[in-house]
Amino acid sequence: MLTIDQATYDAIVAHAKRDHPDEACGIVAGPEGSDRPERFIEMINAAGSPTFYEFDSTDLLQLYKEMDANDEEPVIVYHSHTATEAYPSRTDIGLAMEPNAHYVLVSTRDCFTDGGNDDGPVEFRSFRIIDGNVTEEEISIVATLS
Image (cartoon, one colour):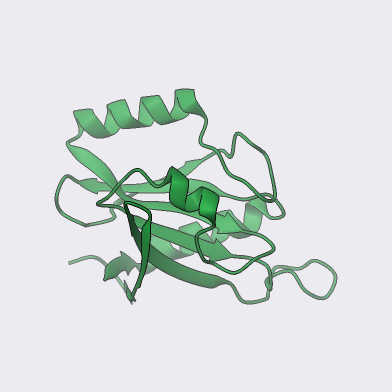
């Protein structure tokens, strides 16, 4: 199960809506081995695409150096789908290299209705992806992480 605080959930959803129609992406880091998503890191989609995301390699290397220095690891790796459901694509599965991470997908496909406003719903789902096997997991949204 993924336990996430409301502020981090809201930040992920806001990033997905703001970058629409391109896919948004980012990481939420936490202390190594804790499974606590504590530090929200919004990344730039270097692909600038509505159908694909790619972390900028320089930014990602810098982030991993920071996480290493802070004894952190990626607890959540997130990105958005702008025209499809929040389920990992074959490409997403192939790129999933963090066996301890929760892979969060946010679909904004139903969000922009009636002339482009972002008042519509989003689909927010979390998965574990290990050795190409995808398992959906429950999400618990809490006020704050205790």
